[in-house]
Length: 436
Image 1 (cartoon, rainbow, N blue to C red):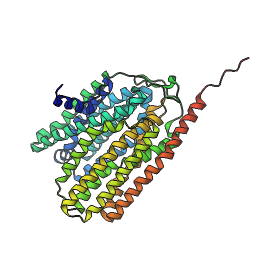
Image 2: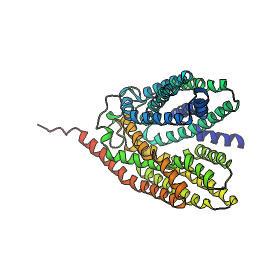
Image 3: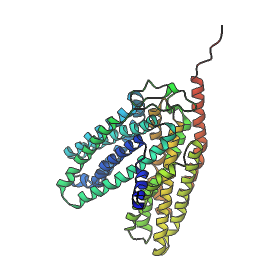
């Protein structure tokens, strides 16, 4: 093997694992991301130019759609436990394809609301199904690694989809733009067919849970144990993990707004920043995931994620008054540290879901985790933007303090969740037989 071929082989292994199931799910994730990424790039143009909505109507529709996701998360999680994670995943993708075809028939605000709600609800069904499948189909020691490969594949898929969607928009042809939801629907249907071909495996027993309690990803038994909503430690842990995932708020919202409104950096720098994040996620998500093996290392990863976010805040707060030749490298460095936070927090999140979920109610726990994560993050765009743009340096220090609070709170809440599972499983054990 030549040196160039060897480098290419190592690069491909960062995205496509040598594990057949990890590779299959990563390919499916890349296809899904390509389809949805293609549409998302042109969604605003489609909503305004084709459907005829105002900017305010389009924004309101997206908000209603996200709210509908929030409402169905827990029921969908319990459904995944009943009918199987793979089934939910595949049905979610197929129905989402139908929702995208619905865009072809939308004229006016209320039909738009119906389609956007349908898209978001079916997307949540697929997401809950996938996250549950990853826990149900992979043995405990490979769950975090599988999540890392899939995250890398998603980044590749979304990037390619965004480029494709951008080319479609660049044509300026409304006919071409109208074709985008059809392409997305076809890609999602291909993905749903691929999901159907994936194996349904039974997870290996954890140390605290009996083998008979392990669910099948195809046809699970009726869930045992107490509902996830009663596990206060898990809910609080998921909330704090959602707060720590606000690195996405910094990445996608606050830093770009700060660059445009409060610095002298050129706007074109934004493209380089997002490229840096994508490349970093593709190249380093899998290596970082190897550092997370259990609850202890997950807590360490959350602390590192918080440290990276705090470093980003401290770096960027000084760019308010720096000269341009210093502003550019400082903002780029702040973006690199946010990417570091993403890599460690993502790996920790996958481990927390694996270690702190009742193995007989994986879907239920994924639904509750989705709600709690959303509650931990949904308020950060408005608050962080206000703090950064109105309070400047003081605001960035407050953001850093919020992140530190999340990192400090997640450790005791994770211990509480772990104790809850141990007590639940101890109570579920049959009493020893008494000799007559």
